[in-house]
Image (tube, rainbow, N blue to C red; front, side, top):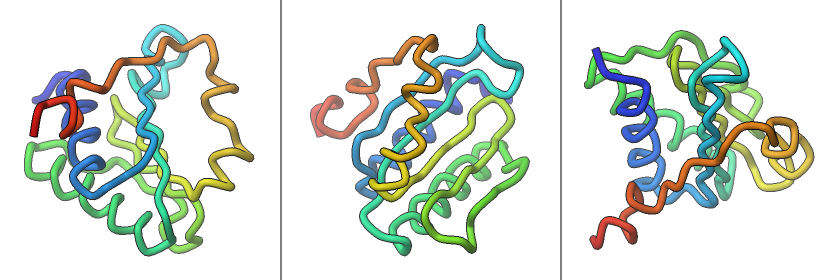
Length: 123
């Protein structure tokens, strides 16, 4: 079993590998029982959203973290992928701006993901 920190890092790397934009991680552990982390990112198209969701699902499933549920996969503008301790939100830019999860969860500390990204890892 992976720790919540490991699951979050795997999700961020998977999203980064498939060119997700503006990846933000909020540490929600002390604020809600829903999950320890919200991983939020932006995709360039509905096809890109599905590609990102599929990649996160594949990577986490390979590491023994099956998806608990997924919402929005067929609707296109926002996918929520729940992995228990980590919830991944993949948005089109206009919907991310509209829903403003970072504003709604402004009490949650933001995690510095730079070390997890390809540019931060020196790749």
